Image 1 (tube, rainbow, N blue to C red):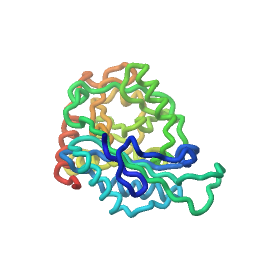
Image 2: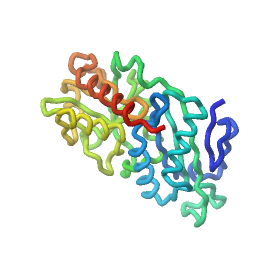
Image 3: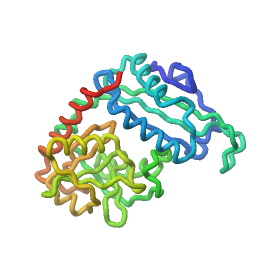
Image 4: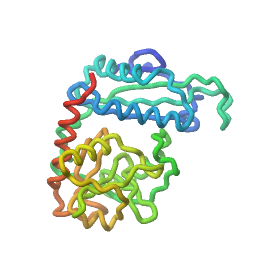
Length: 284
């Protein structure tokens, strides 16, 4: 049984207990983060911790421990679980509240929960075959820059995409792709690598930001602007990034092939650059 962390204690995951009155359960009043682990090391840890701090501050939750301690807990969970490849999940909520009022009382103790998942990140069929995405209206709220645990719209979009034979959903608003249900969306055109700029309309993807910087350092043009579904379908390539997928090529959008319908050279290069970055800078 894997080891988890809950409110200051390391314990078997199946023994972790969170109050049914926790505001994360009752109101989805919580923030989460997911960090990749490659070769037993956290990937891009500083970026994920900075986003955790931004998101918790945005909704007024004070982390019960400092960021250095959060990272220490993550690395200890990796060690205790002998995790070489996979994910570390973190969730912090405002805490348990017996009043169940929309306005939380002062002085609640936040709930901090972490656990790990062993998962193949490097050798996966989607690297060779690519993935399909299905587009659908973006029904989420307006503060998508906050990494909220309120993921109903994304879960519904993922299910709809699966029903359509796709592995990811691309959300569309005002005619433009915002982002994937759990990823950042990229296309490759004559301009270079195109992706939407970060704002309150999208989550600032840690993997996407690192990859954009790596692309720039390698002499590849990165253009930050919105793009339409039609533009994506006409692009030479498309790909998605996230902590759980790293960088995966998109070969079909709403059933139509992108480019020649196979993973392209830019996506392959970006994935290789990111994996090299992860291995050079991992945190143990």
